[in-house]
Image 1 (cartoon, one colour):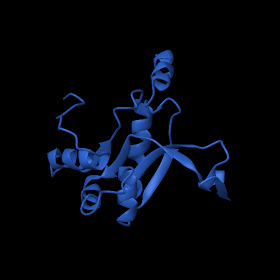
Image 2 (cartoon, rainbow, N blue to C red):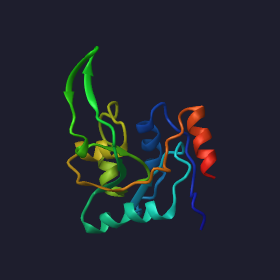
Image 3 (cartoon, rainbow, N blue to C red):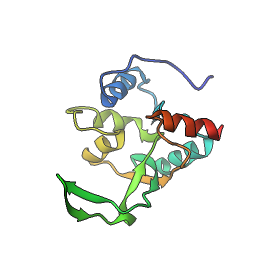
Image 4 (tube, rainbow, N blue to C red):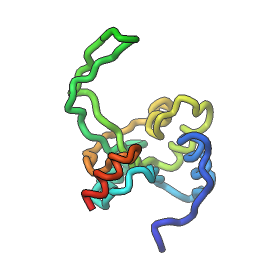
Length: 152
């Protein structure tokens, strides 16, 4: 079997695109991985890391990397809080979920969803974090693309 089983037309938002894809996933599926095409350098090690905690009782798993910078919460021009960076991580994909949990999480309002894990969290699911990969850069600018190309 190939890695790509089917393709669906995306929606106006990430959440709508995943919702459309879930409708195409077999009801027999036990696990669903959701990956951003904008992160082209995913490797097998990351996939293996996100799958393991599902067997340990988690509903979802997110690869993430720590944020090394100090992060400020700002209103207008005013700094209102300095966040504890040891608690902050940049979420990546692929994100892995028990299929039934992800389907339940996609019922209801999807407007505020920034990733699948946020919907699973909101629905009361347990989401684990595993080590991400700095090479899982999300390509959003020409500079990002140049950096990813330099890694090939």
